[in-house]
Structure formats: structure tokens, C-alpha cells
Image (cartoon, rainbow, N blue to C red):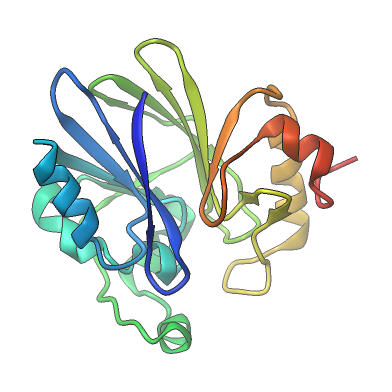
Length: 211
């Protein structure tokens, strides 16, 4: 599985680039700020960006999206219950972070169980509300059967996403964590902020994990 993490934007949001060696096609998850390093990497490795996935609609996860739209067109995916946030990004959050992002109208909404096929990868949508109403995780499986979970701001290493912003809900986040609790210990987790972790580590060490 080929991927590279790019911490982007004011909050060092983890953006993830995945690519296929055979086709040299790539997709990117959560462009949260200036994407010049991403574009330089694409050029240096002869990769063609084809798709953008968003774990949720907060400005620190979408602020760099317009820089990548020329590469992907409308091949952009977000959870259906956060689609309004992409159409009209929060003015409050833009002011707090000192960034500006125009909304988008041409993209695709995804919901629970949707499988997105991409050269070398299968990407399954898991609805995990709580941080926002439309937060999703992406279960990514490569052609060799290796799996990773991109968790956005639903789950961090020994923490979880805040619930006091637009669409946040403590009870829904708890239910989403209970759902993640059904996954295998060895599953590699790539969160929206901070270091990578695993389901097993979070089951053992995360104080927010359902007991």
C-alpha cells in the first residue's frame, strides 16, 4: 500500500495521498491547507491525482480543496450529512483560523456502506457521526488485502474529536466508537490530527473508548 502523510494548514491537519504503482493514479484525503507540497510530490513521482475524499466538512479539512479541483473536477466525495458544509463553509471557523474557503457545489455525497473503486484500492465508507453529523471513516483495502482506517476527527491516538462545534454530539460519537470497537486490534488507524495508531492501542489506552 502506497501512501504519504502531509500535515497541512493552520492546525496541521493530516492529509493522506494514496497511489497505485501500476497506473500512477492517486487520490487524496482531506486537503486542509496549502497543497504545494502535495503537488510537488505528484510531479516528482509522475503521479496523476484523480480523486479527493473528505472525512468531514470542517474548514481545517477542506481549506486547500480549490487548489486540487483542477486535477479532479467533480470527483470529490463527502458524507451526505456534511455536504452543506462543503457548499457553504463555516464563516465562524474561517474567522477563528484566519483562512478563507469558497464553497463547492459540484461533488458527490456518500453514505454508509458505499464502496468506491479506485485502481489498486477499494474504499468503503463508514458513517461515524459525533464530531460532525456527517463524519465518515474510510476503510481502505489495497489489491494485496492490506487494510487501513482513515478516521478523520472521529478517533485520534488516545483521544477523540471535539463535539462542541457545528454538528457535534457526544452520544453519537460514543456510538461511533462502539462501532469501531468491533474492528480488529491490528487495524492501522490514520487520524485527522496527530500520530498513527491502531484499534488495539486505542482499545487499551484511549480514555474515551467504550468500556
